[in-house]
Image (cartoon, rainbow, N blue to C red):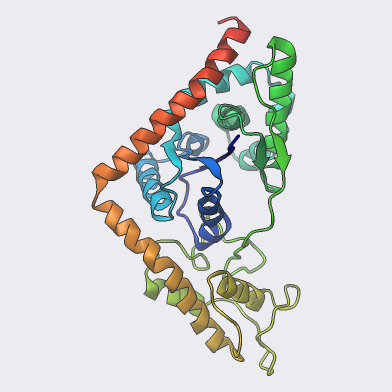
Length: 320
């Protein structure tokens, strides 16, 4: 049986170089040996205050970027266009407990220090569980930031199966091999985030070569001027180490680099070389809206076809 891969990305913020190297590239590589379903999680973007126009804009941008990144051999869809996601989410809310949802890290962190939080932020883990269980993946790769949600997904699937009968495949939680981890150029001890308020250290996938050059030129390094200043040392030289990691991940080589100026020029060239073809594909897709619409319409239809039997089995099991 062909392995099924599933990944949904939220259209919050703009995708970064870190997203390309750490997520989109592995997603593209998985297409060679798996049945891949990749979605735009627009519903998840509504758990906090949002601007509808911005949500539509970011959703559209993400749709094009997934295609531009080479995911055209996958089933691509927008989450809200597959109603089974919200329908199964409610059934899972009916087996989840308030204690479980209250312990979720994202609910605690995003709800801390604010006057009120949306109910959707509280129930978000049930929707995420539905996202996973609808596609019956045997294994779910998970990083530390999402481990708690996938563990809850397993708990809800097992409880549902015990209570109402075997409906869901309980996915195995696996830790993927370490991928490229791109750090903020201004704060090299923090990941480059697509929702960062300060974008000075964040390289976005649609940044022009001039913008990339300015951001890399201003990247934090240190005051070392010795002959071996350009060397990896995550503890003592986090800024330099981060730049070296970006250089290698983008296909460049640190050989012969002895100054920070030379390092930054090499990083700029390597990053621009990676981004330019993606940006060109993005520009081409932006002028062929009919093709993009057809791809996502077909993807949503395929996703509805795959998820319908799972939702129907769950509804029958609970007595609907």
